[in-house]
Image (tube, rainbow, N blue to C red):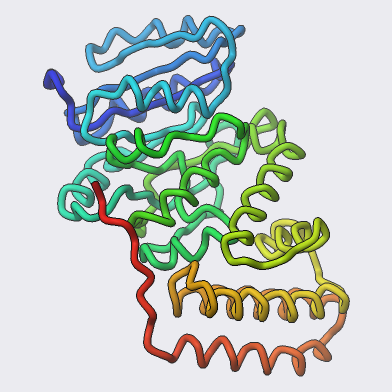
Length: 341
């Protein structure tokens, strides 16, 4: 079926030196069950064979744009949003693949939920050769849980996201970021608009040595710290550089093989209670979802601390846990989001 003059959705794939993988990403979009789309392939100054791969696709739904020099992922995604003709923009990383029902599922959601700005999905993993791995990255469906989660991490996986074009133009990627730009973007949007995630795997992410998260790990760590600092400032919480470093460790302890020692447990006890008290005062994040998040983080800290401190850590667990539990049991205080324009 030929694409309409103004397609419903514009799929944006930014690509820089991914000749080995980008063909699979493109094919996964061309095989979608939903056909009313355009595919914007933006070559961000590639110096390998990426250009040849992109030019090999003669499908009328494909639009090819080339940057003469590498401008970075944030600028390239912004160019894609600017050039998009669809009502919606869907992002896909150039080394990932979309499941055939991805566009259909997400368009159906946004069509039936006009008060939502964007929707994501769960992401599974594959190795460098494309073999499936058991790992699945799950994100919450609740817009309020996503809004609470932004204190620590992005509630939406960018490679599995679809948003309203008008909203994404109002909220461009911050081009000062080069690795954590997706977290920074969705944190800003989640503070003002409703987001959701479909509770199914619709994208498969590839693990390989040239991933941005691996090549630019140190820079991403510093960018995440800057985002955390911004979120904590909104809570009106004083913090040190050491607090930021420890705050970052609250996410992904198992992945990082981090077993908290007694000093970290004592810090986490004080820190999470401070965040709870600050949110009670400022109502920056929705409740009781924020208290629920803090309770989960506190449980994880104590659970992983067993490797160092054994069962002696659990007496410390009780008082904060009861406080978070009581906050969760109270009637939720609605934190208003700005209306979707």
